[in-house]
Length: 230
Image (cartoon, rainbow, N blue to C red; front, side, top):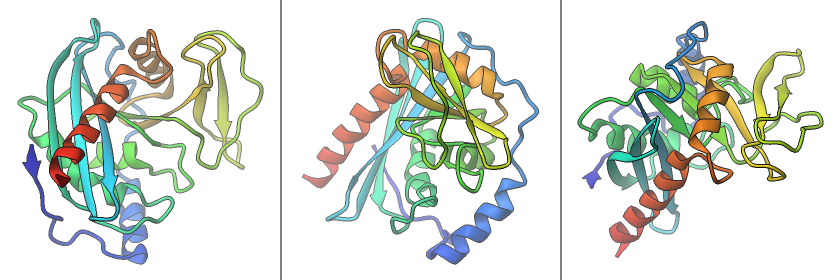
Protein backbone atom coordinates (compact mmCIF):
# COMPACT_ATOMS: atom_id res chain seq x y z
CA UNK A 1 0.00 0.00 0.00
CA UNK A 2 1.32 3.44 -0.97
CA UNK A 3 0.76 6.38 1.39
CA UNK A 4 0.22 9.60 -0.52
CA UNK A 5 0.24 13.32 0.08
CA UNK A 6 -1.89 15.84 -1.79
CA UNK A 7 0.25 16.99 -4.75
CA UNK A 8 1.76 20.45 -4.55
CA UNK A 9 -0.36 22.95 -6.45
CA UNK A 10 -3.44 20.71 -6.51
CA UNK A 11 -6.61 22.85 -6.86
CA UNK A 12 -8.11 23.71 -3.49
CA UNK A 13 -11.33 25.45 -4.54
CA UNK A 14 -14.04 25.20 -7.17
CA UNK A 15 -12.91 28.14 -9.28
CA UNK A 16 -9.39 26.79 -9.70
CA UNK A 17 -10.68 23.27 -10.42
CA UNK A 18 -12.99 24.57 -13.15
CA UNK A 19 -10.09 26.44 -14.72
CA UNK A 20 -7.99 23.26 -14.72
CA UNK A 21 -10.84 21.34 -16.36
CA UNK A 22 -11.06 23.96 -19.08
CA UNK A 23 -7.30 23.81 -19.67
CA UNK A 24 -7.00 20.02 -19.77
CA UNK A 25 -10.16 19.32 -21.74
CA UNK A 26 -8.47 20.64 -24.89
CA UNK A 27 -5.89 17.84 -24.60
CA UNK A 28 -8.40 14.97 -24.77
CA UNK A 29 -7.79 12.76 -27.83
CA UNK A 30 -11.03 11.48 -29.36
CA UNK A 31 -9.87 10.40 -32.83
CA UNK A 32 -8.09 7.17 -31.84
CA UNK A 33 -9.90 3.83 -31.94
CA UNK A 34 -8.13 2.53 -28.85
CA UNK A 35 -6.72 -0.89 -27.91
CA UNK A 36 -8.37 -3.89 -29.51
CA UNK A 37 -10.89 -5.51 -27.14
CA UNK A 38 -9.75 -8.81 -25.70
CA UNK A 39 -6.04 -8.10 -26.08
CA UNK A 40 -3.35 -6.89 -23.71
CA UNK A 41 -4.16 -5.81 -20.18
CA UNK A 42 -6.92 -3.69 -18.68
CA UNK A 43 -6.82 -1.92 -15.32
CA UNK A 44 -9.85 -1.04 -13.25
CA UNK A 45 -9.56 1.80 -10.74
CA UNK A 46 -11.89 2.74 -7.91
CA UNK A 47 -11.86 4.64 -4.62
CA UNK A 48 -13.45 4.40 -1.18
CA UNK A 49 -13.80 7.17 1.40
CA UNK A 50 -13.91 7.60 5.13
CA UNK A 51 -15.44 11.09 5.19
CA UNK A 52 -15.29 11.36 8.99
CA UNK A 53 -11.51 10.98 8.97
CA UNK A 54 -11.01 12.59 5.56
CA UNK A 55 -9.26 9.51 4.18
CA UNK A 56 -9.45 8.09 0.65
CA UNK A 57 -8.19 4.73 -0.58
CA UNK A 58 -7.67 3.88 -4.26
CA UNK A 59 -7.10 0.56 -5.95
CA UNK A 60 -5.85 -0.46 -9.38
CA UNK A 61 -6.50 -4.02 -10.50
CA UNK A 62 -4.94 -5.20 -13.76
CA UNK A 63 -6.41 -8.19 -15.59
CA UNK A 64 -5.54 -10.08 -18.74
CA UNK A 65 -8.10 -8.76 -21.22
CA UNK A 66 -8.77 -12.21 -22.71
CA UNK A 67 -8.95 -14.43 -19.60
CA UNK A 68 -9.82 -11.76 -16.98
CA UNK A 69 -7.15 -13.27 -14.74
CA UNK A 70 -5.68 -10.75 -12.29
CA UNK A 71 -2.04 -10.10 -13.15
CA UNK A 72 -1.28 -7.24 -10.74
CA UNK A 73 -2.91 -4.98 -8.20
CA UNK A 74 -1.95 -2.01 -6.05
CA UNK A 75 -3.48 0.40 -3.54
CA UNK A 76 -2.82 3.91 -2.27
CA UNK A 77 -4.20 5.76 0.75
CA UNK A 78 -4.13 9.43 1.66
CA UNK A 79 -6.08 12.48 2.69
CA UNK A 80 -9.07 13.55 0.63
CA UNK A 81 -7.69 16.17 -1.76
CA UNK A 82 -10.79 18.24 -2.54
CA UNK A 83 -14.27 18.95 -1.13
CA UNK A 84 -17.32 17.19 -2.55
CA UNK A 85 -18.59 19.18 -5.55
CA UNK A 86 -20.74 17.45 -8.21
CA UNK A 87 -18.90 17.48 -11.53
CA UNK A 88 -15.51 17.87 -9.84
CA UNK A 89 -15.14 14.47 -8.18
CA UNK A 90 -11.97 13.77 -10.13
CA UNK A 91 -10.17 16.30 -7.96
CA UNK A 92 -11.08 14.24 -4.86
CA UNK A 93 -10.04 10.92 -6.36
CA UNK A 94 -7.16 11.42 -8.76
CA UNK A 95 -4.21 11.87 -6.37
CA UNK A 96 -4.90 8.44 -4.84
CA UNK A 97 -5.75 6.82 -8.19
CA UNK A 98 -2.59 8.16 -9.81
CA UNK A 99 -0.49 6.88 -6.91
CA UNK A 100 -2.04 3.41 -7.24
CA UNK A 101 -1.35 3.35 -10.98
CA UNK A 102 2.23 4.52 -10.48
CA UNK A 103 2.80 1.58 -8.12
CA UNK A 104 2.15 -0.93 -10.90
CA UNK A 105 5.21 -2.53 -12.47
CA UNK A 106 3.98 -1.80 -16.02
CA UNK A 107 1.37 0.43 -17.57
CA UNK A 108 -1.91 -1.24 -18.57
CA UNK A 109 -3.22 -1.03 -22.12
CA UNK A 110 -6.50 0.51 -20.98
CA UNK A 111 -7.90 2.01 -17.78
CA UNK A 112 -11.56 1.56 -16.86
CA UNK A 113 -12.91 4.15 -14.42
CA UNK A 114 -16.00 3.83 -12.26
CA UNK A 115 -17.37 7.12 -13.57
CA UNK A 116 -17.58 9.26 -16.67
CA UNK A 117 -15.48 10.44 -19.55
CA UNK A 118 -17.29 12.41 -22.23
CA UNK A 119 -20.67 11.82 -20.54
CA UNK A 120 -20.04 14.68 -18.13
CA UNK A 121 -21.70 18.12 -18.10
CA UNK A 122 -18.35 19.73 -18.94
CA UNK A 123 -17.30 16.82 -21.19
CA UNK A 124 -14.37 16.07 -18.89
CA UNK A 125 -15.12 13.41 -16.32
CA UNK A 126 -12.71 11.27 -14.31
CA UNK A 127 -11.85 8.95 -17.21
CA UNK A 128 -10.91 11.86 -19.48
CA UNK A 129 -8.97 13.63 -16.73
CA UNK A 130 -7.05 10.48 -15.84
CA UNK A 131 -6.31 9.72 -19.47
CA UNK A 132 -4.90 13.18 -20.14
CA UNK A 133 -2.69 13.12 -17.03
CA UNK A 134 -1.32 9.62 -17.69
CA UNK A 135 -1.49 9.43 -21.49
CA UNK A 136 -3.22 6.04 -21.16
CA UNK A 137 -6.29 5.02 -23.15
CA UNK A 138 -9.24 5.30 -20.77
CA UNK A 139 -12.99 4.82 -20.61
CA UNK A 140 -15.73 5.50 -18.09
CA UNK A 141 -18.26 2.86 -17.04
CA UNK A 142 -20.71 4.37 -14.57
CA UNK A 143 -23.47 2.78 -12.52
CA UNK A 144 -25.87 5.66 -13.16
CA UNK A 145 -26.21 8.41 -15.77
CA UNK A 146 -25.07 11.80 -14.49
CA UNK A 147 -27.15 14.37 -16.33
CA UNK A 148 -27.95 12.64 -19.62
CA UNK A 149 -30.98 10.49 -20.27
CA UNK A 150 -31.61 7.90 -22.97
CA UNK A 151 -34.46 6.35 -24.92
CA UNK A 152 -35.84 2.85 -24.69
CA UNK A 153 -33.21 0.15 -24.32
CA UNK A 154 -33.66 -3.44 -25.49
CA UNK A 155 -33.64 -6.27 -22.93
CA UNK A 156 -30.75 -8.29 -24.38
CA UNK A 157 -27.06 -8.36 -23.53
CA UNK A 158 -25.30 -5.91 -25.83
CA UNK A 159 -28.33 -3.69 -26.44
CA UNK A 160 -27.49 0.02 -26.34
CA UNK A 161 -29.17 3.42 -26.36
CA UNK A 162 -27.34 6.71 -26.90
CA UNK A 163 -26.83 9.30 -24.19
CA UNK A 164 -27.28 12.63 -25.97
CA UNK A 165 -26.49 16.18 -24.95
CA UNK A 166 -28.87 19.05 -25.70
CA UNK A 167 -26.98 19.76 -28.92
CA UNK A 168 -27.52 16.18 -30.12
CA UNK A 169 -23.97 14.96 -29.50
CA UNK A 170 -23.76 11.31 -28.46
CA UNK A 171 -21.68 11.61 -25.30
CA UNK A 172 -22.04 7.99 -24.22
CA UNK A 173 -24.27 4.92 -24.29
CA UNK A 174 -26.47 2.99 -21.95
CA UNK A 175 -25.25 -0.61 -22.38
CA UNK A 176 -27.05 -3.75 -21.23
CA UNK A 177 -24.34 -6.13 -20.02
CA UNK A 178 -26.73 -8.81 -18.71
CA UNK A 179 -30.24 -9.75 -19.92
CA UNK A 180 -32.98 -7.91 -18.08
CA UNK A 181 -30.52 -6.17 -15.74
CA UNK A 182 -30.12 -2.42 -15.32
CA UNK A 183 -27.58 -1.07 -17.86
CA UNK A 184 -24.25 0.59 -17.26
CA UNK A 185 -23.33 3.93 -18.79
CA UNK A 186 -20.27 3.91 -21.01
CA UNK A 187 -18.34 6.90 -22.34
CA UNK A 188 -15.04 7.48 -24.05
CA UNK A 189 -12.35 8.98 -21.85
CA UNK A 190 -9.12 9.46 -23.79
CA UNK A 191 -7.58 7.77 -26.84
CA UNK A 192 -10.49 5.30 -27.13
CA UNK A 193 -13.60 5.45 -29.30
CA UNK A 194 -17.08 4.89 -27.90
CA UNK A 195 -17.61 1.73 -29.98
CA UNK A 196 -14.37 0.31 -28.61
CA UNK A 197 -15.31 1.32 -25.06
CA UNK A 198 -18.61 -0.58 -25.32
CA UNK A 199 -16.89 -3.65 -26.76
CA UNK A 200 -14.36 -3.70 -23.91
CA UNK A 201 -17.14 -3.30 -21.36
CA UNK A 202 -19.07 -6.30 -22.68
CA UNK A 203 -15.98 -8.52 -22.63
CA UNK A 204 -15.16 -7.40 -19.09
CA UNK A 205 -18.68 -8.22 -17.84
CA UNK A 206 -19.33 -11.85 -18.84
CA UNK A 207 -21.35 -12.75 -15.72
CA UNK A 208 -22.30 -9.64 -13.80
CA UNK A 209 -23.62 -6.17 -14.55
CA UNK A 210 -20.33 -4.39 -13.78
CA UNK A 211 -16.96 -5.06 -15.41
CA UNK A 212 -14.75 -7.46 -13.47
CA UNK A 213 -12.13 -4.72 -13.28
CA UNK A 214 -14.56 -2.45 -11.43
CA UNK A 215 -15.86 -5.20 -9.16
CA UNK A 216 -12.38 -6.21 -8.09
CA UNK A 217 -11.06 -2.68 -7.69
CA UNK A 218 -14.12 -1.79 -5.59
CA UNK A 219 -13.47 -4.69 -3.22
CA UNK A 220 -9.74 -3.98 -2.98
CA UNK A 221 -10.08 -0.26 -2.24
CA UNK A 222 -12.61 -0.99 0.51
CA UNK A 223 -10.21 -3.47 2.07
CA UNK A 224 -7.39 -0.93 1.87
CA UNK A 225 -9.53 1.76 3.49
CA UNK A 226 -10.56 -0.53 6.31
CA UNK A 227 -6.92 -1.42 6.99
CA UNK A 228 -5.86 2.22 6.88
CA UNK A 229 -8.36 3.54 9.40
CA UNK A 230 -7.86 0.80 11.97
